[in-house]
Image 1 (spheres, rainbow, N blue to C red):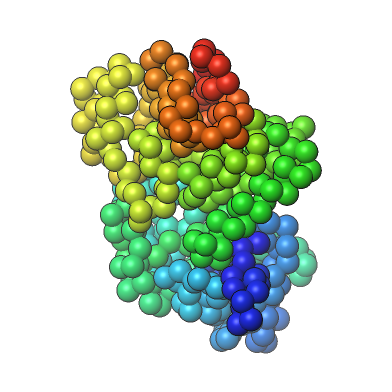
Image 2: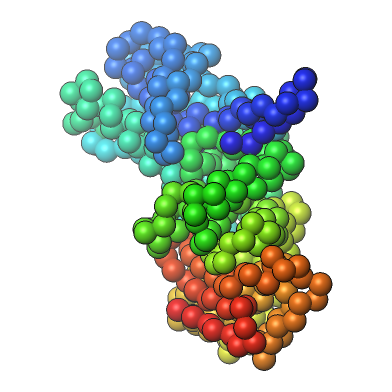
Length: 400
């Protein structure tokens, strides 16, 4: 867990918060219980995707014969984001047909451009929150022996449109409010120094446990993919580095790791391929000109290059290349990423010849044997996999 300095100068754990998706789920559960019982609900306990239970205080609960609502104040924990303190409201209605419908109300954005995990025209409620809400509603119906009933859930954020001005939603084509997000259910506190310290500590623990192959991931979904890709590795080998790619790679090298695997998606890897090692969306926007250049190297048509330059997200570009069966595009991106990572580790490598030089690298950096990049889609499908060996004057590449 991330650490922060206390009043006495000692490190103390930063407090985790909860995602908008977790809040919407707990509110939906509470609202449905109030609708069925016809009495107010004061708290709701849900199961988070990370495998923990969390209890949320319901600050307002109202009900009628055929509808009910519950409200939660989002707690972002330490280092909160733009949605900290937002009012998250879930309203539930009985429907004539069995099944669970989920939609967004006031302050929840609507998707207007392709390339996002949610289809154009739908409320910007991401797949994991949708699944969480659906499972929570189904659990309540099961508990009250009412699985035959149909339920409609509408999530609203009264100040969502104003909050969205502090986010990238407008540029992504999400209009009218914020997105309901979260793959973990919890918000990891983001303090640059504290988060870096937690990454370094995680790598140190892995090394002391005898690990020599570290799998770095950018988030929860990519970490899960890494665990499935390398089931024989111990849990300590998997480190969630967030946006701190360069720092994590340097720490691996300094602590004697001989093999580094990075698993991520198109957005962040498109930046790593250019040598950008701090990949937060606000620090480095996606360069669609660069992606078009990669596509040109991979033999894409001029029409495709125009579409890439006009794309909304890097994920959209990845989907485009995947649909066209252009594996060379992902091979090229993976190669550029590996090259950039080796340079970050203190090595220079000629991209075409594969020759190495020290360029001031310390002895500990010369021990780095291999870097690997694994690019996956938002649906956790493998797009490309490349590895470069930097322990000799030859290069070994594995590309899928």
